Amino acid sequence: MGTENAIFWNTGDEHDEYGHITEDPEIRKKMVEKRMSKLKMITEQIPKEDQIKIEFEDKFKTNIEHTIIILSWGSTKGAILDLLERLSTEFKNIKFMYIQIKLLHPFPSDLLENTINKTTKKEVEDSFKVNSNSKTTIISIEMNYLAQLDILLKQNTKINTDFNILKYNGRPISFSELYKSFLNIINDNNNIGKRVILESGV
Amino acid sequence: MEYKLSDYKTEVHNDWCPGCGDFGILNSIQMSLSDLKIPPHDVALFSGIGCSGKTPHFIHTYGIHTLHGRVLPFAQGAKLSNPNLKIIAVGGDGDGLGIGSGHFVNAGRRNVNMTYIIYNNGVYGLTKGQAAPTLKLGMKTKSLPQPNMNDSINPISLAIISGFTFIARGYSYDIKHLKDVIKKGILHNGLSYIDVLQPCPTYNDINTKEWYQSYEIDKEDSSKKIPKIYKLDEENYNGFVSDENEIPHKISLAIEKSREWEKRIPIGIFYQNDKAITYEERIENRIENYFSNPPAKQIINDKEGYTIANIDNLLDKLKTV
Image (cartoon, rainbow over all chains, first blue to last red; front, side):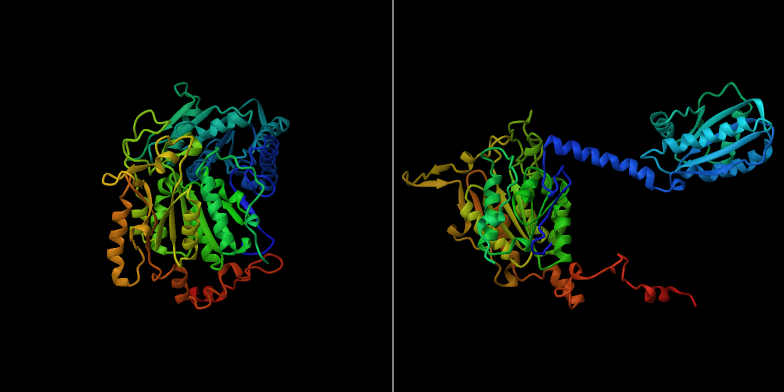
C-alpha cells in the first residue's frame, strides 16, 4: 500500500483475480475446487510422522495369539505408554501397537489403514510366529463422551474399533484405571460393552 | 499527475438496492478524495462486513474488505505500519457498534490519525433487516415480529467519551454537506468519526428518506417550515476546542446535542479537538525516525527470504556464563 500502479483489493468473501467480491457461479465453482484441492496437497506435504506416529510396537514376540492396536490423540499418550511398558512384559503372546493420530483434518485415512493392514498382514505371513486362531482388537482411548476419534475413523476409514475407552469427568486418565480396563478386555470379560467409561479422580 | 473523479471509481458491478443511502456515501468518499487531490495509491480503504463492506470494491484505491466488527484493528495496524497512508475505515452500525463496539471504544484511547465512517441505518440490511445497535427501543421495522426490546447506542456520545477527537454526522442524501464533513474528517489530525444517517429502503420502513426530509410548520409563523434535519453551524453551534480548558464544556455540549432526535436531528461537526496527541506522535516520542522510517519501509529479509534481524546480542544477555 502506498505504491503507485500497484493498487489491489482483498476480501474474505468469494473473489476474482483482482480481489473483487463476486457471486459469479462459474468463478465460485472454480474457487471452491481450488480450495478443496489444497486438502490433497496438505496430505502429501505434511511429513508422515506429523500425521500419525507409531509410539509403541512389540517387535520380537513369537507365538502371537492376539494383536491389540491402540488409537489415540492428545493428552492420553503418557498413561498409554506407561500401560504398554507393563502389559508388553506381562503378556508374552500379545502383540501391542500404539498409534497416535496427530492430524485430524484432512484425516490421514490411507496412511492409517495401510499402517494397520501392514501390521496385521505381516503376522499372517510370518505364520510361524502367529497362532492360527490369532485375533486383532482395535481400541480407541479418548478424553471425551462421544468417542470423537472413533467418529472420524468411521467417517474416513474402514477401520472398526472394538472398544472405546472414554473419560470425561474433568480428570486426567491414570495408568491404574487404564490397566484395569485392559485386563478386562484381554481376559475377555463378557460384562463389558463397547464403551468403557473411566471414572477415577477426586 | 492530476486525478479526475473518475479515477476513484471502479467498474465492479454494484448490487446495493435501488435507492440505498450507501450510494450517497460512496459518491461523497470519491468526491472528497478527488477534491483533496489525494493520489489513489496513497489511500487505503478498509471495510467490515455488511452491505457497507462492499464499498472498497467500488473505489479505486487500496481496498481491504476485512472481518465482521474488526475493521478498526486492521485499519489502525495499516496506519501504524505506514503513517504516510490516508486511511479510511467504513462499516455499518451493526458491524461497528455491535460486534465491533470493543474495538470502537479502544480506538478512542489511541487517537490514530484516520477516519471511520459508520453507515447508520438501524438494521442488519444484508441479512434481512434484524434490529441493529442504533435502532431505538420499541421500534418495529419491517422484518421484526415484535417491537425492539433493546435500547439504542448513541454513537456520537460513545465516540466522545471514548476519546475520538473529531465527531460529526452527515446525511447520505445531502451529498454536498456529507462530502464537506468527510473532507474535514480526513484533514483532521487524529481519529475522526463520521456517523452517516443512511436510510435502508428495503428493511427500515420507519427512518426513511421521507421521514428524514420531513418538516413541521412553525406554530408562530405558519409560512415557516422547520426541517427535521438541520446543520449545527447554521444554528450557532460550535464544537471546536480552541483551548484545552474548554474540553469538558465542549464534551458536555456535544453529548447534549447528540441526544436530539425524532423532532429535530442535527448534522455537522459535534466536536473537534486537534490539540490531542496522536498515537503516531506518541510513537515518535519513543522512536525518533518513526515517520521517516516506519515499519512498512523497513527491509526485513535478504534476497533468499531469510530474516536479517540479528538477535545475538539479545541471546548473549540471557546467557548464564
